[in-house]
Image 1 (cartoon, one colour):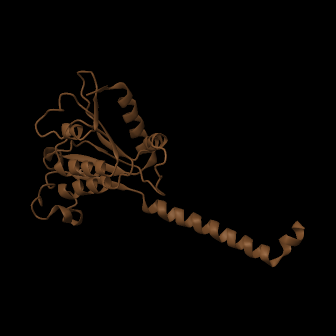
Image 2: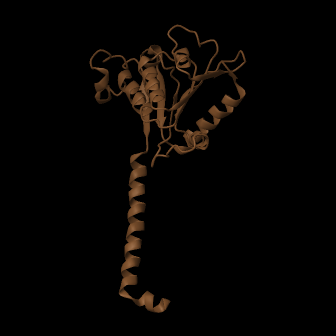
Image 3: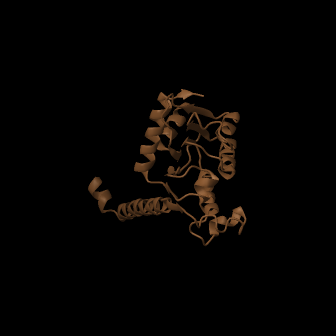
Length: 226
């Protein structure tokens, strides 16, 4: 029976069709994954504020000045606006209103945000960390005289997303979630973005994203709640 079916023209057509579908799916997934790869290297220097008043914020992504602070900030905001499940922030201090507003939009979408910060900087002039706390975001900090000097955020880190999905039963998982990490030397302040010589990287590399997520989770379990 099987020999007869295998030699039947219909079997050949089914086999070719199945092979074509598998090949198509493989190519489609490869293209999709390649389109989702993120690697933006941002350099801040004495030229970053050169065009500060030269264009509206919405046009900043098209600024020809590759050091433009507004261009870099809008790229960060653009990625925050794509968060689906989680944003984990470890920051010494931040004052940039555009980033704060992006976090507010994420909260409105139902994204879970956690923040780790330095205890001495929580109430520093212009700090937006406590603004997030006022919106229901949990803040944690170390009990030490050493500085919590990290400057990174993880968007939809793999382990964090899995943890949230286990807790929030019935929440539909999207077909594609791109995890990303933003890290570097700069505090998210006017001085950091257009007053100092700094560097930052935005990447979707899984090794980097998972490593930063793991360190955030480790700190989160050991630090006290503010």
